[in-house]
Length: 258
Ligand code: CAA
Image (cartoon, rainbow, N blue to C red):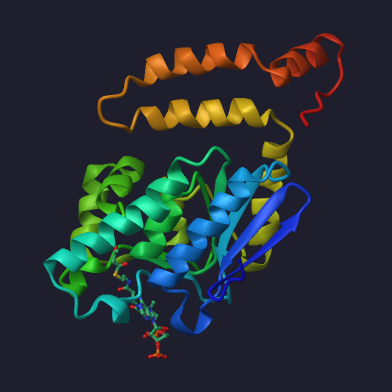
């Protein structure tokens, strides 16, 4: 599939996906969400890929939100459908991938842009980044999981403040609040994301998949995370990567996970 709104690249076992609508500050229209879904699915299914790095093109924005111009004349049912489809195709979809997605937040991450970063598994930011959920200033609320994931990441009180004030916080504040893991200068951002990706690539892809499933289980209604952990722990024992990992330890060498 050829893409109009994103670009993709592969370097060794890292897959790069860049939202590429710089004139619209990489705002997420329907077509972009569809393309992101397709590219993420392909990377997740690709045996040669171990980690995905997601970023925005240009030096101003990661993603400045859902495309406001696209939904400005929507009614209630259209609005519900927009949120439901977006959550299913992109935001919940990312969270439940079996390979880690690192969001390299290189500028504005607002509304659906912050929601995209929050659905990713790891967030790093450049020092010019500004993060916020400004939806209530538009007369709407976050619809791509923001009311849920922001509270999970920063706590209910801070989430309430960010959402009700519609304000933006700096990258440093976001780090203090636990919303991003690291902050670096913009020209060092990709190197940092790649450094984290390389460390991930050294480990068992199968175990990472199991670990991510167990961590996510805690945030899924009606699912006992401890029970999922027990099941996934057991599943690891039947794998070639478990044999390789434990054998390499005993033989005092580095494991080679294919
Ligand atoms: N949707 C559509 N277009 C957008 C956009 C968005 N979310 N954000 C920016 N753009 C467009 C602007 O309309 C402008 O296009 P034109 O040149 O054609 O007018 C272009 O990108 C550049 O933007 P600005 O001129 O506004 O740039 P700025 O530097 O003055 O301001 C900004 C930057 C503060 C990020 C400002 O663009 C802004 O406030 N954007 C909207 C942010 C926002 O409200 N996001 C939430 C969207 S709603 C949502 O995401 C709902 C949901 O949860 C599902």
